Image (cartoon, rainbow, N blue to C red; front, side, top):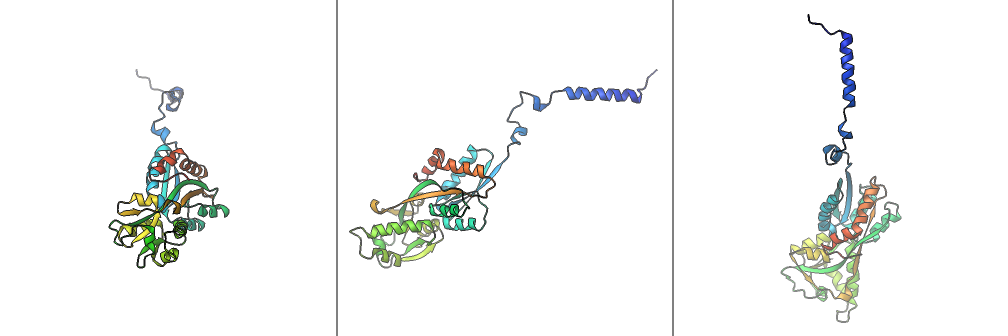
Amino acid sequence: MTRRATPRTLLAVLAMALVLAACQPSASANPSASVDEPSAAASVEDVELTILGAASLQDALDEIDVEYEAAVPGTNLVIATDSSAALRTQIEEGSPADVYLSADTSNPDTLVEAGIGVETVEYAGNSVALVVPMDNPAGIESPADLATAGIQIIAAGAEVPITSYVAEVVANLAGLPDYPAGFADAYAANVVSEEDNVRGVLTKIELDEGDAGFVYQTDAESSADVQIIEIPEDANTHAVYGGCVISDSNRLEAAEAFLTWLAGPDGQAMLAEFGFIGP
């Protein structure tokens, strides 16, 4: 005769099954489990850093974005470029950012003095270059020709860092013995446009919308559509790029790590590929 299990028997069997299941080793306790399994990868918290950088850094930052994200897994760089002065103003007005990279040191110094930036770090150097369209319609052969009446010079706005560097170069050129009297005033009279950033200057010269313009050496070398007119070595100037971490960033540690990397050997090697020199 078939014997039916009583409710008490069923409960006993169920209890035994639960005990046996609890004694089985779990996947997390398995010493042979790989750290490359999805469960391990999912435990890494991604960090997104907003980097605001000078327009002259655009090409370099595009490559740095790829290299840094590969070197520091889980980090995502969100990069925007413009005039250093425009970016500083955006930050002052509350635009979210973690790291600010300027083409000078005065802009980040301003943020640091206001308590918006942590500390100015010098991370790159550059120099000034004079460029003309590839066909050079004005026949410019040296910077002295910029004083010739009718030459159309494309410049950057007053707040753009390269403008202060160009002012130094023009003053130095005016002091050379073979340059015409009143060179600086004649140069200023020939400025027909002031662009928002140095890339704007380069673009107009590339498009033949002006006869000449001063840009950074790295910008000049990056373009196949302009000629570089040599500036006497003793008249050129050294541009120093500085950056800072933004004080109210909620990713301070990651932001500081990025700026340290950029100013260190790996970052310097990357910048050198685009013509930048040490600060």
